[in-house]
Image (cartoon, rainbow, N blue to C red; front, side):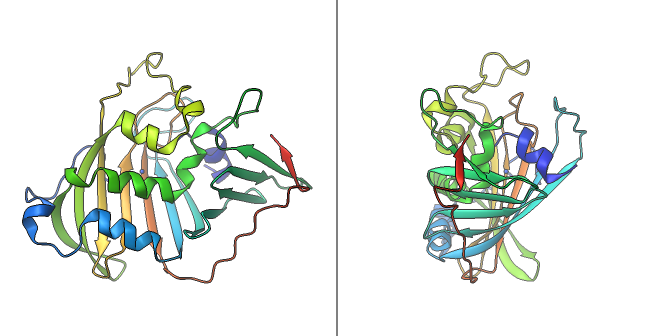
Length: 254
């Protein structure tokens, strides 16, 4: 499946069900770095490269099959709150206020407000904010008290410790969406009857350097959310990143 398909049909990150990895709490472990501190250190790192993997673990309504994966590469500037991802479209950029899309062959960027007002066109996939690791990391820090210390693991040559915790669907979606889009979530209409209190498992891998190296969230099963399991990998902290936001004269309101 193409990255374009995932961008235009997915909604809002390997371990689909469970907060695994031990029973010792962070407070009891004596660990020198907890998850909230790791998030703070990560945001303070300035920049990073990222890889997002969306794995379809439940039946979707757009032709995806269980086991299908979409992988998106990108860079993030934490200081400027800017994200650029690599897809098979010509350009895709996020900042704190909007996202910008220019498909292959287009001469103009299209701008869509992240918090659309009355009369604003809404991009078909309201979950594009999930491509922004900043609110995802901030959400993880907000559920700090739920985490337990897991095993030490090696990720691509980096020594890490895994922490496992859980939040609830309402808290996650309120963290990632403005009120204007949160209110459009089909809590009652969906056949799976997503509940506000549904558990959202989360696993976080923190490197020995105190930085978040990977996190996995199992998203609520909304009808438009077909990328159920999302993995965010962060690397190359402090990389030379230059993300340009399209000029206003280039951007056409969506």
